[in-house]
Image (cartoon, rainbow, N blue to C red):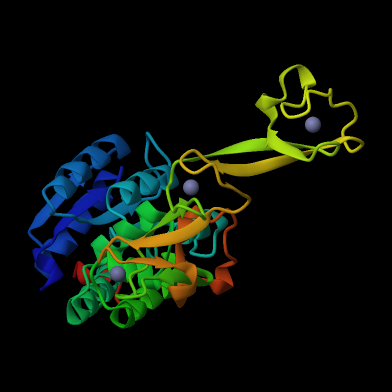
Length: 331
Ligand SMILES: [Zn+2]
Ligand SMILES: [Zn+2]
Ligand SMILES: [Zn+2]
């Protein structure tokens, strides 16, 4: 698929820049070009297109009259996590304000004044990305939306939720990592179903005697004098229910045991409930000892990160060829 069939949304306050960019895009074969001069109209138009699954490529001017670029970008990402945003600015790409946008997951940069060759180059890079997605048959938008909704997820879990093989999903995630859209947090070992390896399991806790789930957490009191052990509410007026003596000094003639579980069905008392798992995929019930442990890498969205990565750690951004400038084009 050629990206020239895509919608393009220009959110840019400067009318001359809009006219020039529209002219460049038309020359490259784009025909579905929309222009908004404010952040507010930009976001409305974007929402409308995203709703119809016609996500546009966004050219975003850094200076807008009614919102910051960062504010608008986070709104765009909230609607479509894999939206392609090209930031146009006269600021240097090493400027902290621009680096902040890179750390949010914007990785296409256009230096103003705009040149046809630069616009062309950045769109070629996007075309390559789209081709890569299509080659491996992964719906990037769906995967990234899933990761965003989970906040953090292992490759295995993400692959299972999106119905992909983890091995084919990992290269896609690696590419997103190179572009600083996501980052690797750690490795994790997850409980996998005994029968089908699914990591989508529900934990079940039950009585260790009758296996029922009707139990409560309570506090037990042991009266040393007579050996009675019963729940604290049976010691009415601090009187032992067995020998009727008053309990006096904690640690002296009685002790308190917090966090005990008492089965409402069979009256069994236990400190640790019995744990089982039910597989959401195949329905199999299995214990911790029977589970398969599955190890994989955990990824998280970059804009969930509190700290901005240093610029040197960022990916390489589209290199821009500046050989052909505006004056040459207008000859
Ligand atoms: Zn029980
Ligand atoms: Zn007693
Ligand atoms: Zn299973």
